[in-house]
Image (cartoon, rainbow, N blue to C red; front, side):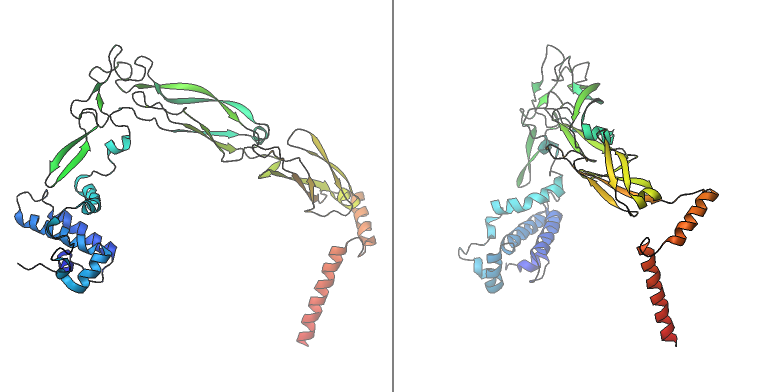
Length: 384
């Protein structure tokens, strides 16, 4: 009986990609797998035929030889898959099909990671903490109350009643997995008796019902260093949930958020503060007192003629840089305040000031009016 064309067996074209080739093989192999069709000799034959075709076409060199010489390239000891059937290379390729057929991939036994130990690492915990800008500046020692699982004191975390201890699982011999034949293959699954732990507890602890841990509320001290920023994460190793049956505990992560401040806006290690000043101070110059984040009072010298938006830098008056000796700066931005609810006398004085004003006293206004006049004159010349 002559062999069918390998591309025909897999239902693909000669120009198919590796991805298309593997996809076709997976689909047909699952369809004709002997374990899904017990006693069906035709499916067994097709399954072997699929394996032989894929063994050749998945290899670039073998595929090139097959495209040129056909089946003759692998006859007379030419190295084809032929009746060699299920080689090691095929087994590695076919392992992902086990996941679809039997749900073997990443099962409970694989995740436990400890062969027959029965001990599982506890989960990590998250705690959100809000602090003030002043606390971020100075740093603090905070107390947090965490509801979590801790090792059972009665059984010392073993899960077994006092005076007893867990026993090696008789089904898997402590391996946490059992093997059994499935057609051509030997499959390995999580032990159903111990759920992959490798141990069983005949007489569980009454306090923790065999889990080896109980729920408690703990008070922990957290050191918040100076200079922390919004979103800073602090890890407390081993302060998370206790592990099952004496397993190692998880970690506790403190996520910090900063409350909005009524005076300052933070930009990294720098602070920004907006300060209103009177029209007289802006015109004549003067000195403005500004509170700093460290509680001191900083003096800002305002030169005569200062405009709204003028910014002044106070070196070293910002936030500390985390885990360093550096400190940011403080920037004071002034806003000239227009007087309101003027008395009659004040109005008269301002009107007199305006009458005596010139281009030298208000250069920006005079310059703007000059540009407006030039613009309008230009429009008039175009119309004429």
